[in-house]
Image (cartoon, helix red, strand yellow):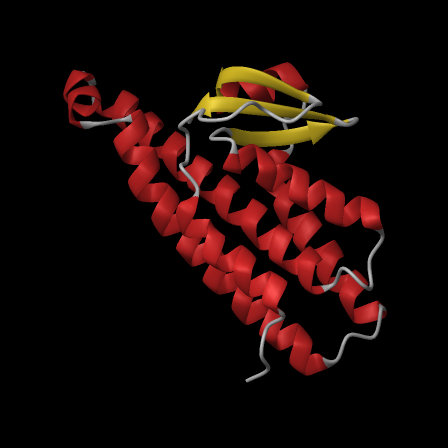
Length: 181
């Protein structure tokens, strides 16, 4: 197996240190903060998020292939990206559940519909974090083959997660962020 570059290995190791949904740091410039992911999406006017990450992921891989990245590097990137997504999901799952819907919150939910809606929001936040981490890894691996704006976009998304907030979407340079799922 091909060895990952040191800067990518460092990024992957850093995933476990993120304090998801803690709000522990200031948001980077260009962000608007909302209480929940749903509020952030509504405020952004972007209701097509379900397909967004698939499009971004496919575009990143297409650009990497067209840039002539060797097949072994692409396979290694895919493997690393899948590992990152799994680690981020597991870390975010534990932190998001504890931080946003602890035992008292679950006990307070009165009906199954509300409980399922809350669980769906938590899982969507986990997916948001995993996809942001995955995009960052892909861009870090391909940084010599992509434009600087693409790497900056991925790293900006990840900086928001590192600050302790979720990022739902970016529209015209504004990142719509949320405190809790």
